[in-house]
Length: 211
Image (cartoon, rainbow, N blue to C red):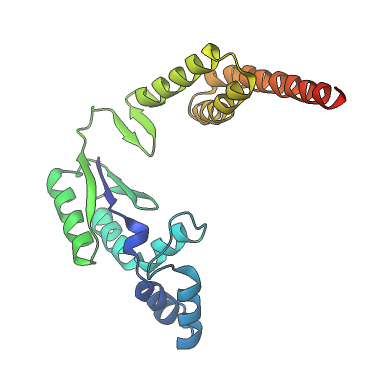
């Protein structure tokens, strides 16, 4: 398998590229395409954090993705894309193929980075998930992040600070449960802690108001 990302993808998608999509692909009138391009961009490029940027970045450079996908199909490879994260897998996935993908990206005026080649039996991390011979697993770094947050939660004595740690921790454990259902009991336990802490804080707040 080979992996490659596009560096600063949203910032690299220009207002001109967005305009061209609406004008050339969607066949909008020039004034309409211009208005949409201005609405969807900030300082001449797609903004990070906008819900429209992920899908817009793909369509603004769909020709590039199609070219890479066609090259992959011609070699019997499977291509998946998540925003700017491309993974191409199959027997013919090689360092040479990765080099050719990076050349296509450069020809379309973009820069690639985080380019990796993985041999068949080597574990691979794909969009935050470890893919190995036994299936998908939670990567070690995500295990460590959860453990560190849990240790901080257990060591904290102030309930407000415990809650600040707990809320993102619950989200991380829920994400882990989507990969490995064995995490579900831990998620339910943490939700129970959160409800108990929130109830205690509400009770304390009421008592202060009455005083």
